[in-house]
Length: 243
Image: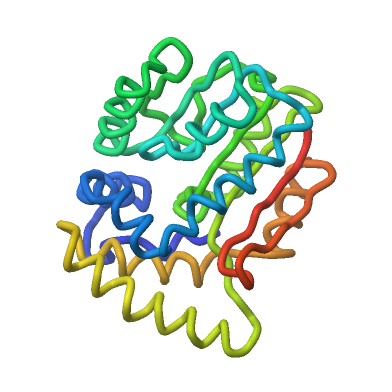
């Protein structure tokens, strides 16, 4: 699912390898462009998503596709876990995360490592909660990645995913498509070293099975009490499921 949309179509490399290369290329400007292109709303989206974990107060948490660590930092602030591990396929993004961890004096609480969502290097039933922000649409095999996240989640544990979705209401849909297809690539090319990364973004969102298609996939894998909460007219969505 979603395997045909890759950052660099001409490259003879797997989607996973191309995504790692792309994020290595844009790691230095990723945080700035994230906040700039979303007009800062991405911060509010992360805050709302992490509130889904407050009721269960997870002690140990896995952040998949952790990137530069912002989702995990929000979790640390809101639910105060004892241990957080972040995994990502991009060493460039993890280098930025490590710098931020050191600056916040969180080295004993939050650690990051190179890791693949489709083959997580953890035992079954390890984590109280799993989070993932804007990463699942980049999985080479979405179903396999979700299944491995399910595997390492403890019984009664909770998964919270934050991901772009497709607005379907006029005129938000039309404005969103214009912004994503024209404005985002323009500024991405202007500020980052990889113009293609910000053309791939709308393509990957368009190909992603959002809404009911995604919650049904979570159901198929075994997640219980799955739900979708849309944010800002459907531009992003929070997906939640329990084991």
